[in-house]
Amino acid sequence: MEEKRFRKNDEGFVCAHCGKAVEPLGYSSRNHCPFCLWSLHVDNLPGDRANECAGLMEPIRVEPDSKKGYVIVYRCTKCGEVRRNRAANEAKVQPDDVRLLIRLTAGKG
Image 1 (cartoon, one colour):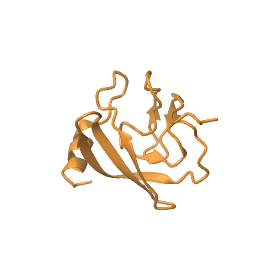
Image 2 (cartoon, rainbow, N blue to C red):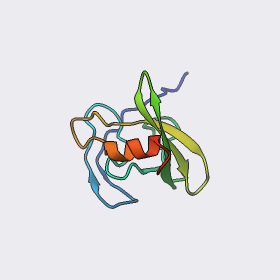
Image 3 (cartoon, rainbow, N blue to C red):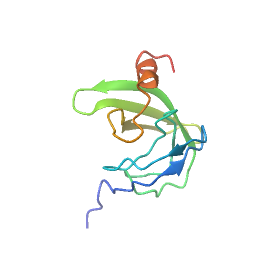
Image 4 (spheres, rainbow, N blue to C red):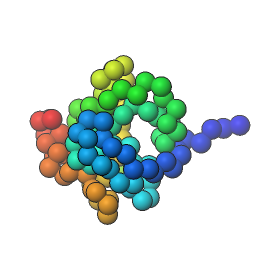
């Protein structure tokens, strides 16, 4: 039996990096803070919350993507794994800080 590649897990949380309250995205799994763009290393597959590392994921750069808009590239500060995630800069609820996305696109994290 094939495991699903994506599980919707759209819950609010308090950012482990900046401490701000983050609301659910409303249409997908919110996996990073829209204020500081940091995340937690909690997923093996998107939304599964099955990764035991739980390290802070630092946004190291942003890449433009013709299909997905912006893609944030993260590095786990605990285990070093690198992951990519679509930005939520067009979200209706707490969109990603576009100034931070632009700074990371320019390589000035």
